[in-house]
Length: 121
Image 1: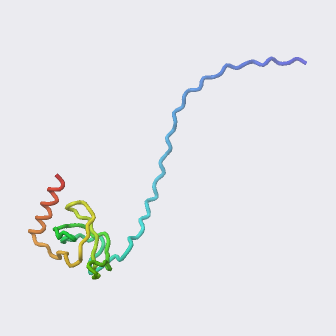
Image 2 (image 1 turned 180 degrees about the horizontal axis):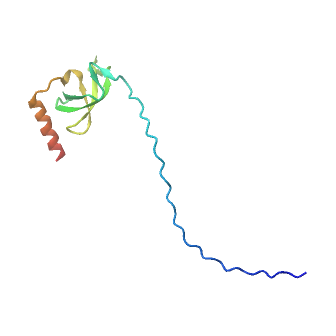
């Protein structure tokens, strides 16, 4: 029997392939847990914007309520208070419900706007 001669094939040059980027999966959205604590206290709701005097330095502030603290103890007394994001300083602050200004005058609103413009420039 005759053996067939094996022919060596020349190696073929492969063209370099580009690495493919992985496709981003669409996010299904973050599930935000419900906020802890009460959603309403003393007639105010979370997310409501208020003018008030912040605690303890009694400076004028304006911001959105984030959390209620209905049973906070201060000087051996239970004093309900809340946390808000102060638009003047950009920080979380605490204030007492008694220090909220329900109907702010134009003078108070101008003071807050002036303080906000000073801090941003």
